[in-house]
Length: 208
Image (tube, rainbow, N blue to C red):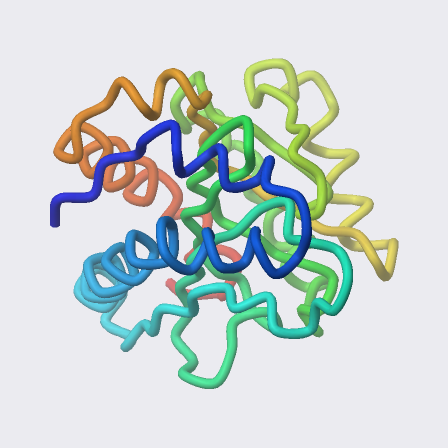
């Protein structure tokens, strides 16, 4: 897999108008997501023993506003990923994200949050440059190393108690960092991130 990020990938999100931005996204970025999709669906299937499927964002419901980000998601379900914990590789205009996410459409969020609250110590084992977020629609995130002081607990309690709450954990690379990486370096970074997230995923899905 020779998938290197370029400035033009990020510049897609500066293009005005839904049609033009989508056209550029389809031509420049989507082939990379499709290649990642094949690589990491195989990776997760091997690591978890469950068959994983890639889901490349199509942004099909949009009729006016052009997408501000795009991604490929991975889940052990062929027809969709939003109703279960899932992994993602994605792009905003400012950064790349490699994450594990529980979004508001997951029906058993309460149980997931309770399991994670009991195993909060798992998060101390994650690398220091990991981030947390409570909203997949926002590019903002908090450093995990600061979150140990209470942010982590409050995000998980919110996931448990608030219907629209979400929980994302993983890594960001700034545009400059991503563009400076070779395809091999990004692949190593992504695999290392997903490896670190697998124990958290196993708690989410109650896998012993």
